[in-house]
Length: 249
Length: 155
Image: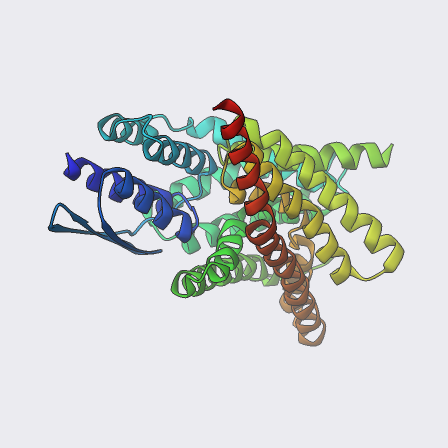
């Protein structure tokens, strides 16, 4: 019985870290679940790259360690996991059911095509927000669609997010330059800006700040470096494309 | 007319950005509205004080502090709302401009722009920090009291 609580706490916290939740929240979820399972002494250490849980239950010491490699941003999953953790620690949900629901999260993901379309509309709206007209909106929609597909392809072959983000920003800049070569009256700047804003590492930055404030210095520093590298790779991708063959603004 | 278009564009950008990251339905509209509020505050401050760092600070604060309150009302992690509501304030234009200057081999102007981007992001970071601290120290006890009151009323 207690094994289930231990597995659940480990699964839930690791899923929370994987989907981009804060470190303190992942630790708190594991702690609450273990406490509702009747553990007396609980220690949880969560890092962006791993998780270890130790609990004492009826005189026995249990320890589990998990290593994490891939990370993603999915706000819906953070919310679902938070709700599950609340319900388990309030005693409304049994650990077996909770494990079932966590395993369903991955299979119930949004269809990639719909996600791509939302991303395109968002990028095109940013283009309009920074002063683009109707033609810029249309081109931005098209360019964002192609670069999103390219990002999806890159993240499939190489798991590093820096790599796919840099590829995405380069693709956006290349396509924007090609379109502006054919239609010189287009405003290239707003198309590129609209394309890169959704790629910039907002969640990593926010989490780095919040982690540091809650005392998780290692996580804060690691996420800060991740955000910085990500931003630099996106900016470098644009600079590379713009510098080829001279720029006429 | 231009103002209406940019309001719709800002709202749509934040809304679809949230939907792309499959944010929960009950949070996504509130976050997009807060994004609009934050951008509006930024725009007004930038117009009247001509100080973009102060404008970024106040705009981010206007987007983040209400997010902490709403997060506690609809019971969702505050990051979910903050992430969407600050997205219109992200300094994409500055990054683009600095990279453009670097690509043109104009390193003086490029480093000036990149420093501007750093200070601007720093101003946003301070605002997020302040709203997090306020949420932790000020809002958490208030909401705890409200919850306890509800419990005693039920019992």
